[in-house]
Image 1 (cartoon, rainbow, N blue to C red):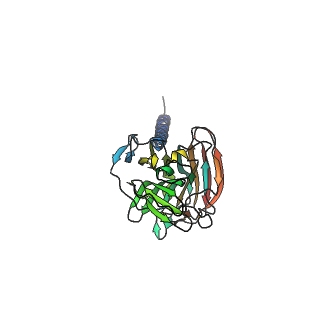
Image 2 (cartoon, rainbow, N blue to C red):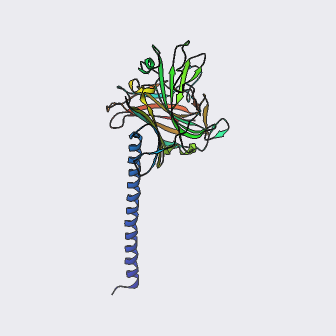
Image 3 (tube, one colour):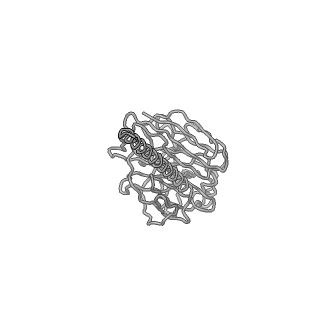
Length: 331
């Protein structure tokens, strides 16, 4: 006959065993959901909306839902004069592809020590910028009546721009000869300095949410371009995605995109994003040019004039199914 103690021990063992199985099942369930969400983010970063305009979706849906567009008054400061404007303690890295770039995604795989960020006196006041190279040879130059020009396209998430709140949009730039005029139609504005003569215009903007800088690890920003089609910026914040598409013919950037810069910097106008002391993050720039070749880490190749107070570390590159460069920055 079994003693009461033996019965109790066996009962406890059975409960522990069941609890262990339930715990394992719960772990596997959480792991499967995490993998599903990761797959969803990857899908949405490369799935362009079906037409021009502004779109929104949330996990697990992979269908873009059209929503009303807004406008934005945001303006960046191009990095034309390297003696005046830098990112971090240098001029940033760019991922250079061997063939034309068709898409890129920027993210922060590791973020540590970030508790605050300010732009001026405003907390969580920054932009995520995914920028192309300043490129010659775009057929868009001739379409606007210029024998030559440079084009530059920015895919942007602005956390809290004055008068606009948080928004996602594309900013387009044309750099023209000093005596030339910006296009008189199409919504182009002139921004001429002693260093350059620039014309810029924004795509429609989609209203988003202000994300605290401490949550940068949850964010991804992508740009996808299609010749004779649309260019799309996609911003993913955890389980929510926002996208804006405009015609590629705006700059015909698909014909000249070879370098991609991504970083967290000031919120327009050459401003700075200032992080608390002890901040550190890893920056990833994944690119697609139709090959598995590793991109090249190009130093001092940043094209933005906005800055941050982080010091750049070393950069590495890898090929394969998701070619990318990766570097660290910290203070």
